[in-house]
Structure formats: C-alpha cells, structure tokens
Length: 470
Ligand SMILES: *[C@@H]1O[C@H](CO)[C@@H](O)[C@H](O)[C@H]1NC(C)=O
Ligand SMILES: *[C@@H]1O[C@H](CO)[C@@H](O)[C@H](O)[C@H]1NC(C)=O
Ligand SMILES: *[C@@H]1O[C@H](CO)[C@@H](O)[C@H](O)[C@H]1NC(C)=O
Ligand SMILES: *[C@@H]1O[C@H](CO)[C@@H](O)[C@H](O)[C@H]1NC(C)=O
Ligand SMILES: *[C@@H]1O[C@H](CO)[C@@H](O)[C@H](O)[C@H]1NC(C)=O
Ligand SMILES: *[C@@H]1O[C@H](CO)[C@@H](O)[C@H](O)[C@H]1NC(C)=O
Image (cartoon, rainbow, N blue to C red; front, side):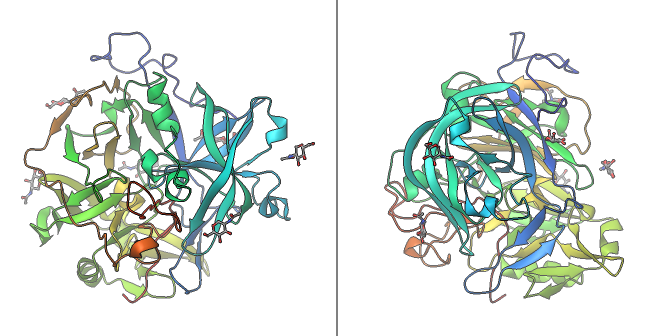
C-alpha cells in the first residue's frame, strides 16, 4: 500500500528554493518512516539478552522505525524496519515455517513469493543472518524490482528468509562490506539499496539523512541523496567515521564528552568513546561507569532480568537534558525523550530509562539518542554530519547531496575532530568470531572469515542489546 504522504521528488511543493540544485526535480528519494503504534498487537519489541540468558520481552516498547516498500512484479507490499546497523535487505518467504504457522505473524511485515513475481531472479543460497539470541533467517539471495517513495530500483539484491525465526522485514542500509554475503560466505559485496541508488544515478552520492522526530510524534523521514535543512537547527557539523581494522564498516564516531542540563561535559570530558549510530537499536548503551552515575541521578532502578532500568514516569515531565559532545559538536537530548513507557501494569504506565550499560560491547547510540539529532550518513566520504533536530518540523527545504568531499549542503567540517578510537578488536565483545560480538546484540555474521575485516563481520539488524554482569 502506498501512502499519500510519500514525498516524491518533484511532486511535492517544497517550502524553500533548492539552492544548490538548479534542476527541477532534485535527485533525492524521500519517504516517511513510522514508529510502530504501541497498541499494535502484532508489534512487540524484544529486548534480547545475551549469552544463555532468557530472552526478555517488553511489550509495547514503541521504538522501531518502519517504511513501506514493495518487491516484485506485480508489487508485493512490505513494512520494513529501517536499520543503519546492518547492510542487507531481507524479508520472509511466504513459505517460511514461521509465517505459515498460525496467528498471521508475518501479516504486518509482509512475505515474498518468488513464484508470484515475473521479475524474480535467483542469485544463490548463502543468505544467513543470525541473532545473538539464536534467532535469525536463512535462505536465498535473490534479485527483484524494489519500489519505495516513488522510486523503482530494478534487480535489487536481497535475502529471503526461508527458514526464519523473526517476523520482521529489515532494510539494512549500512556499508556493503557488512553484508552477510561478505561476512559469512566470503563473497564480494553487492550493491545494497543506498549503493545501488547512487550507482544508477537516482542520487548523486551514497549518502542519506535520517530524521526520527519526537518520541510523541509517529512519523519521521529518510531522505536518500539529500538533506532537509528545515528539519534541524543551526548548521550540520561533519565528523569522521572510525575505521575498524583498516576498513569503514559501521557508523562509529567518537564521543568525547557528556554532560547534563546544559553543562556540556559535566559527566566526562576528553575521552574517546567509540559509539555506533544504530537506528535498529531502541535504547542507547553507554560505558558502565557513565550509566551508573546517570542511574544514580535519575534514581533509576536497574533490573537485570529486564535488562533495563525503571524510572518514575514523572521524570519525563521534568526539565533537563543529557549533553553529548563529539569533538565540540553538541547534541542535547531532553529528559522527555529518555523516558519510555515500557508497559502498562494495572492501569499504570511503567517507565524505563532509554539508557543501558554497554558492558564489554561497543557503545551504541540508538533511537533514544537519534531522535534528538538530524544525522547525515555519508558512506561515500565516510563521514557523519550532525545537527540538533527540529522536533515536529512541518516545513521542508530539500537540497541534494553532491558528489565530492564537501557535497553535503549546509555542513561544515569540525576542525581537529577525533577520528580514531579502539573499537574493541580483541576479546571484549561477546559471541563473535575472534571474540567480536554484534554491537547491537542483534544480527551478526559468524563462522566464515571476512576477508576485509579479518574474520570480524558484525552487523546489527538491531533489536536491542542485552548484557550481563552490570
Ligand atoms: C504504510 O502503509 C500502511 C498501510 O497502508 C499505512 O497505514 C501507513 O501509514 C504507511 N506508513 C508510512 C510510513 O507510509
Ligand atoms: C514455485 O514453483 C515451483 C514449481 O512449481 C515449486 O517447486 C516451488 O516450491 C514454488 N516456490 C514457491 C516459493 O512457492
Ligand atoms: C545459518 O547459520 C547458523 C549459525 O551459523 C547455522 O546454525 C544454521 O544451520 C544456518 N542455516 C542454514 C539454513 O544454513
Ligand atoms: C511534537 O508533536 C507531538 C504530537 O503532537 C507532541 O506531543 C510533542 O509535544 C511535540 N514535541 C515538541 C518538542 O514540540
Ligand atoms: C554547550 O555547548 C553549546 C553548543 O556548542 C554552547 O552553545 C554552550 O554555550 C555550551 N555550554 C556550556 C555551559 O559550556
Ligand atoms: C546553513 O548554515 C548557515 C550557517 O553557516 C545558516 O545560517 C543557515 O541558516 C543554514 N541553512 C541553510 C538552509 O542554508
């Protein structure tokens, strides 16, 4: 089903002029994304825990972001979970056991039937994405026609889960090097969605912007190939992505300080904490000592069985904020974005704080951080541009991202930004090959050595990171 609210390049009257783009229809592909409605019965967020511990389910944690898209000819429709922490698009096959079992579990996300598509092409059978809790999906890589936001992409490669234990369809939009085809099967990377949009000239450069919007708003947007300057305050600030073992593989930047209530670095300063920007993660995961001090100040009660900390829901009505400092670039996250209603018990809301301890894993800035930021993921130049979000912005001023090092409009490079930090290549992460684990506690490639990453292919078709021993 197509939403009439899709922003289609050229069909929507923009509020402002497109200054850097003289052409009539800018080369951007835009679409609305939607957070799952909390009363959606099919929708439950799974707070997955690590390593031998039980999987914990928090109902109605309204966190994941979805976009509508279709595959095949004629179109089969899907609701896809947008994930910057992984790199493969995959959907369930109609024949998967999970989807054929009762309860119409895959009804909302959609299922793919190759026999019903005249444009289906088989690629290979190496698709296999697995999650830390043991769930995952395996089956074929195929190619077919993909449509979203008024854009048609022919012959897009994606995975179909024939054996699957997750009902979600996932649109992973990270680096191609992080595809499971590369990590597990040792194949060459294939052009995933953002790469293919760039290769085919639908957008100028492999880069996109993500605006998640307010916790109390239900829609945000993703803009491939463009920046919407009406959706943030001030100017974009550009920071380097951190390499891992000599390769750009994940959206990791360096957090250099944190503070509270406008004091930019009152929690810590002058430290280099690598943090993964992961829209597929509901919460953020920070170093344990930082989390301890935050919990103390907000009187948060950590519950190891839930893997989260409970707080008084009234905290969300208080003034205050957490400040995140990236080499001098500050993003402020207001308290009301940090308090999430996890469930309702006997008519009373039960709230958790959107921050949990990272334990031995890399820190992750998930949706509880990302909602407060406008983020440009520039895969071509290996840069992230950030600005404070403009919550509930209704205007629009879309500008194309151009090829080249300074191609992101309205962005200035942060001088002397920290560009390296130890991302834990050794033993600290759990569960992975060579001791590396999925930073989101989600999908990761195991087993086969990744030729680029020395056996450490890690993707995060992220649900939520669990941890032990906090
Ligand atoms: C996706 O499609 C569903 C069903 O038509 C619709 O209710 C929803 O608003 C759409 N979401 C977005 C983000 O376009
Ligand atoms: C497609 O059709 C073939 C031949 O009729 C059959 O063997 C196969 O199981 C079908 N596949 C699906 C996905 O229905
Ligand atoms: C996918 O990988 C997992 C973990 O390595 C393995 O247990 C499973 O058998 C694989 N599934 C298929 C269908 O190959
Ligand atoms: C954004 O809109 C939502 C829904 O109307 C509202 O609850 C929220 O307070 C607004 N946020 C801001 C920061 O104005
Ligand atoms: C915190 O950072 C912001 C943005 O850089 C700046 O405007 C503000 O003055 C800083 N506040 C303090 C207390 O240093
Ligand atoms: C771009 O950045 C400048 C600051 O250099 C700012 O004044 C301006 O409003 C920004 N926005 C646009 C749309 O150019």
